[in-house]
Length: 233
Image (cartoon, rainbow, N blue to C red; front, side, top):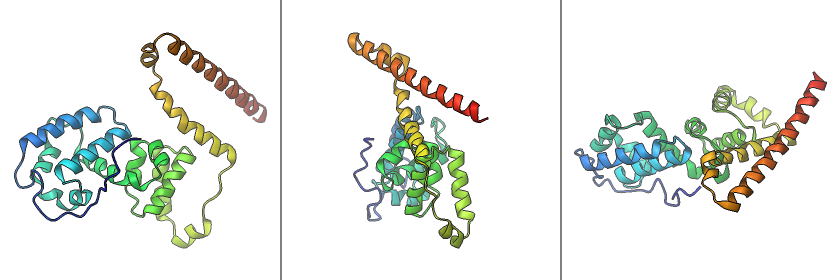
């Protein structure tokens, strides 16, 4: 996912005044509201990253550290949080900042496979290595947001000695394979009827034929699973 995250989100900056910090900059706030509302319409991960990047860059001089340490004294950011035209809640703004800051710390393929809801759960895990492990487990096991939250809560409530002794159980290959397929299947959300109809000539015919063949293969596979399950019942 191209998100422009090559720059650092925690660079050290001098305590110089930030844009709109001491007094509300109405133009800065209005422009941010308009762009955030447009970006947030999808609610997808790319939208959260865009919003987080926008806030950190325009209000906090490109430093997520500034966002955490100086937001309470930043007049324009406080105005943004309370703006009546903003379609995001103040908590959503903070999650967007945290997800933007967290994203580079995860494996790229794993980070992109997770939803905004998954990322929101992960930002509460302070230990980076454990956060990466939870993220990998979520993708490999196809965990829902609720399942990931319970896994994190269970591990946090577990005694450290027991957690170390138990370790991580290896997943069967069939589970790993299905998890990978599930992740790949999400890309089909881009293959909407409107997107297909917009194609021209042979390109549309090829896509429709390939999609039909894929659907038939999935149907055949699922029919076999159902028969096997019926026989084992």
